[in-house]
Image (tube, rainbow, N blue to C red; front, top):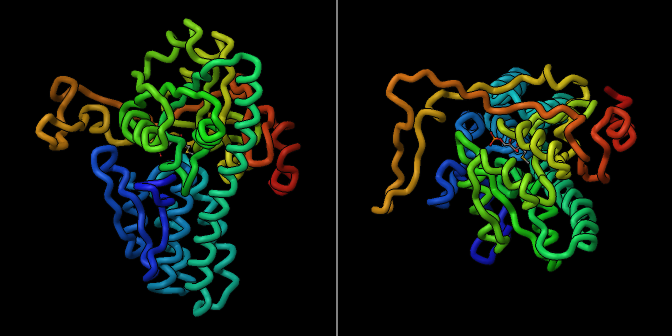
Length: 363
Ligand code: MRU
């Protein structure tokens, strides 16, 4: 993505080596960056959702390990950093993937060699994410091009939550084909689910699509089914926080309802899936841990007042009980295809194993 004409990632190291992120809790009304000075900052940034989205959570965890090694490269500190970061959020498997990867590479080194190796690997995790998302974009572009050649006119794509540039190190997963298509001159328009309760669609997806000049319309979460019935959605692209080896897709709460509506209306429903988001140890989506977040995310909402201040207000009656499951699981049978960095796989155990034989064999 470009911000003010300059290429920008969501996590990076400054010239002086400081690890910096965009504080996504301030978007869309303020663009602020903050430094992650140590392990505690990295853990806080993930848990409090200054950074969010499965791939970016993984990348931040990798830098969290590097920051921990800079302060103390001992075996005990390595284990403590792994455990501290793993406890931040339960659902996105990229977190565990990044922490296990870092631990495996660092534990075999002598402690004095760990800090440099950890920062180098964290930077490589970021570069790999960008490459994966670029490849997802290329495969998704092929799909969009084919649909556009068949149908002509503007392609209307519905997306849920933010699986965009802001959810990854760059480009995004669900947005990658959209940016590729837009840049290639294929007319696209995005229906952006607002994605209550945290409004990642309204706040983040709408912001980044707007920055890139992609036509889009924010809709309430309940509008998607109606738009599909009326033939106003050509296909859905969503991201995922964890996909099982059999193709069950865990993603932001509400994704399942969109998949049901898409199925009922014959609208193709694609999941953009980087390989670090596949949990090869699970074959049943029901086994995925679903994060329960604070009820305050449901009972309160924040927005910009006419006076230009961000204000938080209470929605339901004071004291009404609230519940806040943050993710749901869409069964593989409702998924048209999984757009991975290696191509588009059917959402089946066989489809994923054929696409990633080395991982499937190792599981
Ligand atoms: O709670 P969040 O904002 O971290 O949830 C993000 C999502 O559900 C995304 O769709 C998912 O992580 C895929 S990001 C490429």
